[in-house]
Length: 349
Image (cartoon, rainbow, N blue to C red; front, side, top):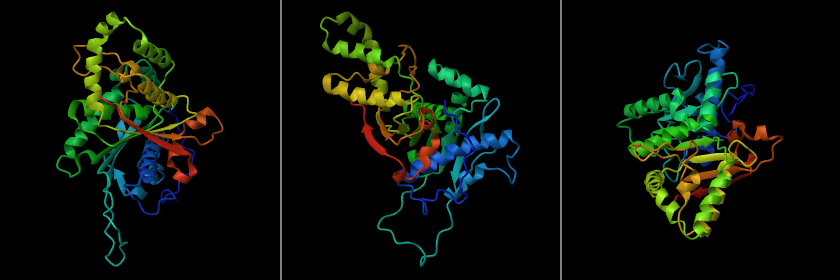
């Protein structure tokens, strides 16, 4: 899920529409994190083509102009490939007072670290296996997911004492990599109540069975005499309500294209849920997500796409084909090059 070709040329000075980085600008944040995710794709290509750590390496052009450097060498590596990287912000020299631009308010601080995860490269077998695991809701068995959690946990220990806590580390990913970033961020909220800024580009949400589940939930709202079903679902409902209350403060940035079949389930889910909430007096978010919960689990197993709260960015720009709609390159464009709409969805406890 999420192959992104490395044939595209990139201006080594950085995106042409960003002359001065504003870390508080939504468009800049989106473009920069997308570029860093792109860098993880190129890091793997550099490795396979023998360009890594050579003057011919192409990946560094994707982070240098943002005053970033690779925090670890080698980057995050799986059994046979690079699947992610940690980038560290290196403050540029301060301009002399006479050359500094006056600001009406202090600029937004940059993150200290950004952890980026790439999507699927079709020739990398572990990527395909992890895609299948996501479809089967077995991502907890994937080494990539477990290692990503470990790396970020270590990074947070290293960042202890740096001011800004939750803003010190950002997470970003595309497609399969977005699922990894989502999993890491969600786990930190559940276990440590840490809400890391998270940027999710085209994460997979295969939703073919969701219609039936949501229809079942709607039927429960209007059908009388469902006492048996209600009693059976009570432990499940309480567990999921507690989980959703924990996750509610975490609001990742979710970027999807309306024609992308791989992640269109998110659009369908949130729009349908908003309609259901208007029709039903009870919150059925947990049921509509279709979670698998065991009462004796410390943290219940959840679907890879579980997001109770989110800021959804929908790109309605016309594309030549559905496959093109899944490309990461859309999100590196300036706002004027995208037909964007956004809406914030917050779980109501």
